[in-house]
Amino acid sequence: MNNFLSLLLVFLLVFLNGFFVAAEFSIVKIRASKIETLLGTGDKKAGYTKKVLDDLNSYLSACQFGITLASLGLGWIGEPAVANILSPLFNYFTVDEVLKHTISFVIGFSLITAFHIVLGELVPKSIAILSSEKVALAASHPLIIFYKLSYPVIWLFDRSTNFILRIFGIKNISTHEEIHTNDEIMLLLTENYKHGLLNKEELTLVDNVFELSEKNVMSVMIPRTDMQCIYMGDNLEKIMDFVLDGKYTRYPVCRENKDNIIGFVHIRDLCKQVILNTENDIEDIMREIIFVPDTMSVNALFKRFQEDHSQIAIVIDEYGGTAGLVTLEDILEELVGEIQDEFDINDVSEIKKISDTVYSVDGKVTIDRINKLLNINIETKVETIGGLFSLEYGSLPEAGEKIIHDGYEFTIIKSNNKRVLRVKIEKI
Image 1 (cartoon, rainbow, N blue to C red):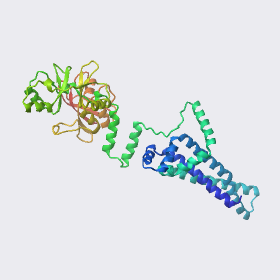
Image 2 (cartoon, helix red, strand yellow):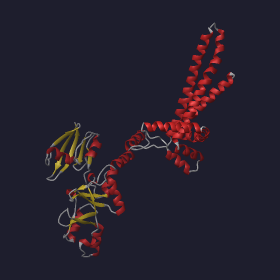
Image 3 (spheres, one colour):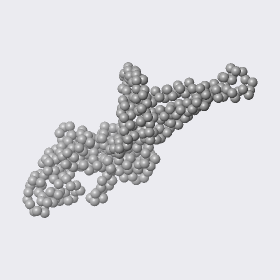
Image 4 (cartoon, one colour):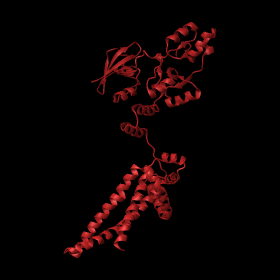
């Protein structure tokens, strides 16, 4: 074989090696969802790529088989071809024949190895990683043809591989799967945020969605002590005075106490009763209310609200008593933050930033929110910052009492005879 033909084969084998390397990396990296989108547009190349992804293990075997053949061929033809070209150059020097062949072999081997690694491995791999979609679409059809031509050998390789994997108890990869955990998704989104592809509000919203899926109703409810209820037996005038002083649109209706809730009243129905000047009993305009256990997940409650066309539920504890009340707004606030309407303008924010190192927070703020706000890790069995004080002191603490956690000082600045109302948090 003359030197020109040998060099031509060397370039062809390097190209084939590069093709199979690029095909392998691109079909592993490309997102199946992107191919599904392209299929919807009628892209014919996407159909070939979809076929490859549906039998990923077999086509990866085809890529490996192609790389192996190209590499073996390159080693068989490439080094002798380069050595033959270099040998005549040593005729101008008085060099021993054995030494001449040795030097030619070393130089030829080094050049072919460098050529193989750079142009046959690294460059195709980088291109495939950076442009996986374009490479996969371009390479899929030729790869399918090669797979069909070499199917008997690849079939044997696949069966041998699967047999060995079963011995080690490992499931083979037969389809294109790319499943991410919540933490992995947040890591990817955080990187997008750092590069300006997402804004902070979008990142926070997704983070809140994942956190919400892990919460139960107890962590988002309004506690029993803060529930505002209407009592059976109250006349319409008293009820109207009560709701007009309040800021809600729906009020639970109790008999003698909050453990005996029988429904709820919407202020729209109350106003209608006043306008029509009717003397109907409160039971006539009362609506049914949902009762849910405090262990129910927030996701399940949200679905229940959708199914029942409701926005309010009473939370029941393990003993059957009323633990609190939860509304659709409470769930939404876990996602997007506090939602203040025109009646909330004068309310003090649950979390108020005084300076970079000082915060004023409501005693009902959850420990999870405190941990996230301060980037610390308070582990406790209670739900709220106010509950943390009660746990630490063994009784209802008073204003001025302090707790130190993870480099922060927590000080009660306001309380009553029922609970902690306000806490100052300061970095120390």
